Image (tube, rainbow, N blue to C red; front, side):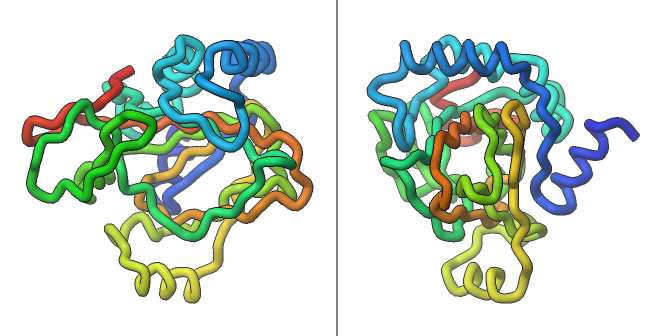
Length: 231
């Protein structure tokens, strides 16, 4: 069994997996420089709409990133959203347990099981039904080392199999299951299912903890809806 089979099996069973460093340091350095020059505003905290930037588009299409996405979703998958998260001394936060339920679409079009709607940084977003989210994968490229003190992701394995969870169900999951910690080295890729419960603590030793978060999908949207980005 090759690494891709092992990785895909971990995502299937546990809901997440992480690679060894697979993105070369030279690519990471080029990406950081590209982000600093092209991103709309300072790189602190978080930046949306990253798939508008050529450097991030190239990253989404690169062999390491596509290899991770394709081994889970199949070779026809594509990137549909990009975000930057950076915990640092003046932008440090914690994130409660949650699932990633919203997707970016080209325009609002009322469709069964889609909603509520919102706008984020000028882009229309909508909560998608479980059938759509189950065919997606969140792919995080770590630009810096992320150890226990850098506020890494905490993940509840298996929770992705339970559909959309309401707050009381989330509390039950958190109380009854042990969390796993997604530490990662610079150049590593951590991937998880959107429906997997995940959280993160504030960094206790905050430096840069830059992560490019890419959402991948395996199918077009139903009912006249279209992905805002398709890379």
